[in-house]
Image (tube, rainbow, N blue to C red):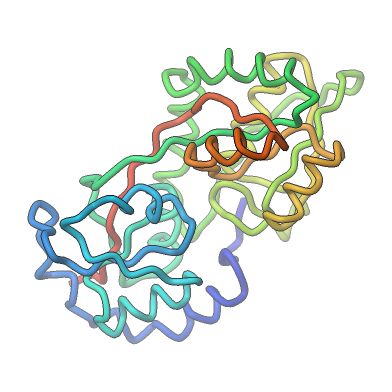
Length: 265
């Protein structure tokens, strides 16, 4: 499980700096059903950035870092911060003084990347993805995410398949609740980690995770050091994959609501 570590050290520092915002009543005046002209913050290249890009009714403010977006929200430079539901819930579980509106303002869809020489894995994953969001396993993962407290995610327990063939997974170790490094177990854990382990278990594989930054993940995938790449990858990347031909992109395996984070009253 996660033990109160943030997406990056910078975000953790930002959390500590924002303790005073618990008294901020900025979110009280926002009407989720009337957002015309509102200043909505997004983190550059995150799901909310892509999804809201064509919303002409919103004033979109883009930030390079999550910490910058949070500071903008604190000091009323923006009216709300748009974020994917799972991260919004994770953030609010570790930082008192914030809440999110349950009503979505858009949706993204997540995919995985596959080494271009592993079309066999792509075909298997596409079969898995077609029913994943309707499965009991997905409902259990969703429940674990939405019931998180203090950023702690309870992972599935999988049987150890000693002799099963290995698939190597490129993963971001600093992206809870999707994938993150647990300081106690020294394992990579999260909802995307559980998803890909469920896939592997269903088709008779065992997993080996290769943690890296996004650029490192791409390099590992292209070089063949990794077979699959995960961690909240937007379907928007499909067009880039088609242009570069460096890797394959799966069908979507989940629909992700985009919600608004505001300070509590």
